[in-house]
Image (cartoon, rainbow, N blue to C red; front, top):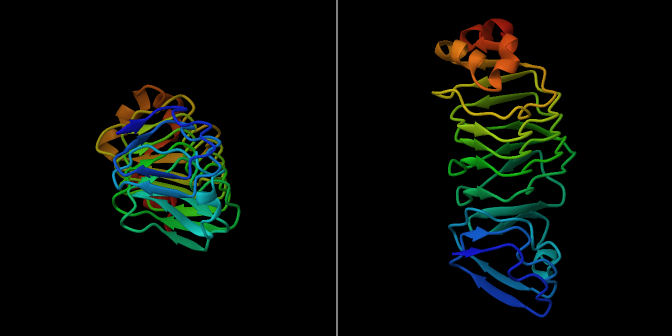
Amino acid sequence: TSINYGNLDGCTNLKSVDFSNITYFGWNVMSDCTSLTNIIFGNSITQLWQGFNGSVWYKNQPDGMVLAGNSLYKYKGDVPIKVIIPSSITYLVNGCLGGKSTSFEVVLSEGITKISQACFYQSTGLVNINLEKITVFGYQGFYLCKGLKHAHIYNAISFDSNTFGECTGLQYIIIESAAVPNILSDSFTDVTCNFYVKDSLVDSYKIATNWSTYADRILPISQFATDFPNG
């Protein structure tokens, strides 16, 4: 059910492959498989990298959402004002919506619970996204998303390195998680806004590992309406 790093690297004559039973794809598993024209993906993918961009299969895909089983592999070309992820998609491939500079918002399907590594990397045009179901925020998930004005987070368990790094446009972050989520020292690099958290957890946040750095900017959610009366 898994293919590890470089397992099929350099198979330049391979034209068709069936990955119906593969759920985990290691990094760069099919680098330089440039002749690949037909790929069958399954609907239980839990890890997939952009290792097929040089293939005929990818080059033949029209602009818009390029799907790989239950995954959004890549949004090819320019994005519309609103990107609505269909309910059949439960996994976002690393970097699938990165590098977009035109203004857009994203509506995630309820089945998506993880922001993958570099998912929206340097998408300066991203202005809004619903994060109700997200529990895991991956490495550089929103790194350099400078157009993002706010983040409302409901069920976060963990934030990896630079998840919101350099998101200098953020005016506030609301976190309604039932417990204090884990963060690294650089999960919010150069983010200067306030964090609004559950009133009952304010003190816990202020002494928690790495959160203590932001102690003077951790405020109770009950204060949010006063600080931002227009939301």
